Amino acid sequence: VDTLFAANLREARAAGLAVGAYHFFTFCRPGADQAKNFIAVVPRGEPLLPPVVDIEFGGNCPQRPSPEQLNTELAAFLGPVETAFGKQAILYLTDEAADAYSATIIARRRWLRSLETRPSERDWIYWQYHNMGRVDGIEGDVDLNVLKGGRETLAELFAPPPNSSGTPQSH
Image (tube, rainbow, N blue to C red; front, side, top):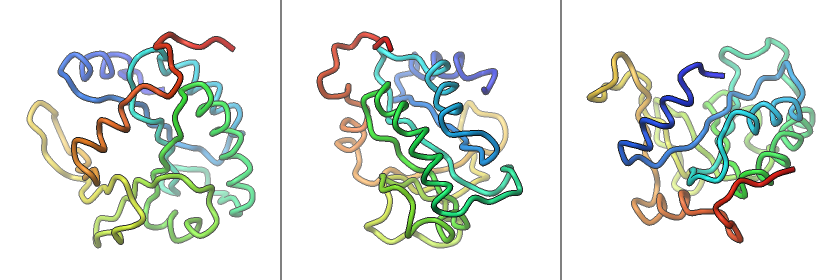
């Protein structure tokens, strides 16, 4: 867990930004365990963007799962997380992970990291096009991204889940 997650979430929300949570999916732990951690850390009952699951090789365990193994563990993560937050997750994939898994991975909207070429028009909702950008108010390098669709898409992503009462769910 990022030690600044709660503060960053609170401060970004106070600044009027649409906020959400991003999970680095490790190949070293079962997906169900990762889901429990995500659900315990990310607040519910507040407007959030869909959960994002980062699937990449950099900084991950050296043992790369087969597509079947990845889908099994990813399903074990997505089931509880999507139920808890009432929204289908978005999968963040680097070029390398997309090459390895794109054809077989569980179908979800994609956030593609492609620093050299623009992804095809049909296969992304977010596109990370830079990893050393500058943004006022942030020290150091930041990732720069594009959301396909503009304000209407952002409003749809940030909307409360269907049949939501706006209060946290208990399990």
